[in-house]
Image (cartoon, rainbow, N blue to C red):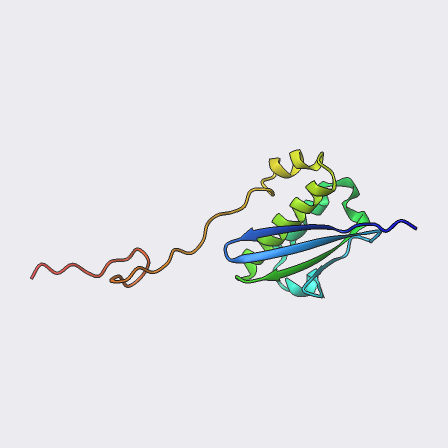
Length: 133
């Protein structure tokens, strides 16, 4: 019997990193940190929709199970990182998916991060009030 290989991919957004593994001969289940995706993103339908959106675009995507490991950041960053990872994995699966993923912006890594606080200032960009006298 021939052993089937898993497809791995990594996605990032803000300070979150998501690793996804596509498991062949599945039913389209998505597990995030050993929990079902509905439990992990409970009460946040827009983030849940964000994570599952690349799977809905590809015809054969429901034949795989998705095991995600997400670390760092908050819920928005984690959802974006998961979407990025799943999209990259589906492109690895079949190069024809790249055009669809690129058109929907799923392959672009969102580079926006929190700017660091500078010394001598109360926040990253805010200055202390200038006093003439």
